Length: 189
Image 1 (spheres, rainbow, N blue to C red):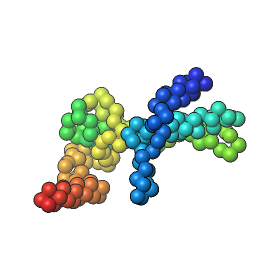
Image 2: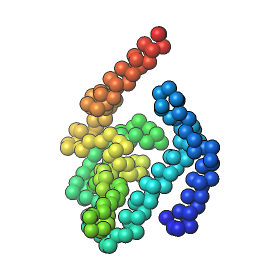
Image 3: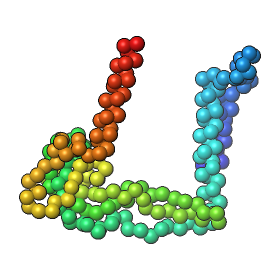
Image 4: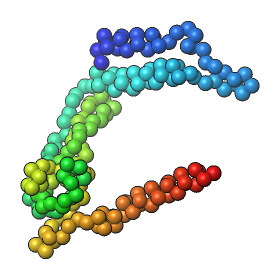
């Protein structure tokens, strides 16, 4: 953030604060004060500014920028045949043949050590799968997929039954049903 941008942000926050806006409504019986909607907005903007400055100050004072050398793609299983059912709407419900490209880093993280050195590294690795039929790549986090171990498996599909029997899908389904029951009970009251 440049000095001019900082000054502009501070001016915006100051313009939201007027003499009467600084008064907090206090309940004289309980002694509890409450901010009005405008005051909450100003405080929120102030905290957002402090949060951005916290990173900015640390980054402006770094001594060395290091880059952790790691491969953008872990090709350990590159070329492995898989069957994949994409969750992208434009792909439909079809299960297709796919080729595992490898695990691809989806983001870059950073850390600042006590000496002020910034280290950047790749993170968030996720399987990338090329689907020739769709001429597209999907990630493991946006699909249902399995390695194909034999020709017989190539003909098997990832069915709704298989998806519903995954432990976290069962948990999500049960949680959703419990919430629906709670809402119905509240409506009846």
